[in-house]
Length: 99
Image 1 (tube, one colour):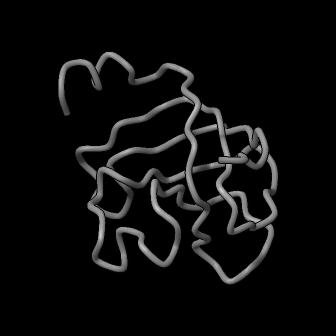
Image 2 (image 1 turned 30 degrees about the vertical axis):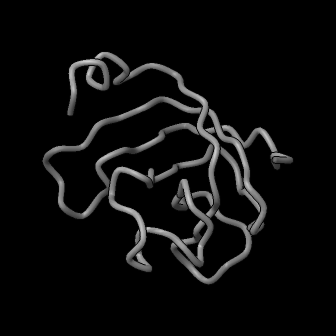
Image 3 (image 1 turned 120 degrees about the horizontal axis):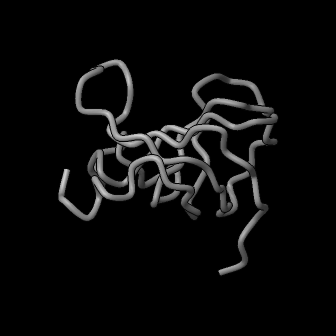
């Protein structure tokens, strides 16, 4: 991680992006937020791991294919290969965005 990114660890940040559920449910508390829509996301070979963040929401968020915004505490992960590099903990869903 770069020095500016390391300085952000533990701070509350607001992130825009597209929701990608881990499960097949439509109300998630644990999901991926991608800088790209699902059809062009990291898993489809377009972006890289720097374009996604693992989100742990403080309440269920209904799935949408529209861009959303969430706010939470940033955690950096350089150790656990079972989690993403960027993690947003205790996240609050702020709503859909209208680009």
